[in-house]
Length: 109
Length: 113
Image (cartoon, rainbow over all chains, first blue to last red):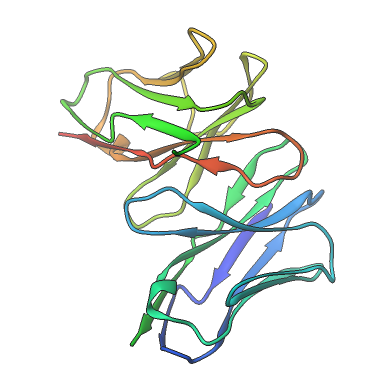
C-alpha cells in the first residue's frame, strides 16, 4: 500500500537552531512530492514541489530535497514565525494528493 | 484576496441533519477537490472533481456525501444525515492539473452535536 510517513511528529527548536524534517514515501508512479505549511485553523499553504531525485528547492530559510525514497525539509536558522505544522504530500498518477501526518514545529525565541 | 473562498467558516449542526459546504474559486480551474482533517489527524482526501464529474473518490466518500458544481462557479459538498464523527475541518482545493501544488481554502469547521 502506498504510504507517506513524516518524522518526527513534533520538533522543538531554539531560534537559530537548524534542523531537518523527513518525509519517506512508498508510492508507485510518483508524479510529484509537495511540502505545505499549515497554521492552526488554516488550510495548507503550498511551499514546494519536487519531481525527481536529486532536485532541490529553496525559499528563504527552507530548502527541500528529494531522493528516490524520501524528502527532507531543511530549516536553517529558524525564527519563531516558522512555527507551524509542515505537511508532506505525494501526487499519484490519478492526480490525487495524499498527505502525511505532518511535523509540528515549534521555534522558541 | 484569497484564490479560494469557503463558506461558512464554521457550521454547527444537529446529528442527522444535512449540511452544504461551499467553495468559490476566484478564477477558472480544471480540478476541484475536497479534503477533510479531523482534529489532530492528517489531511484526508475525499473526492476530486473534473469536467463537472467525479474523477476519483476515497473510501471515506460514501453515499452520505455528494458534490456538485451547480452554477459553474460554486463547488459544493453535501453531507446527508450527519454523524458525530463527521466533525472536522473540510478544505476545498483547486489546481490547474499536472504536477502543481494545490491551492487550499481556509476551510469550514463542521461541528456535529
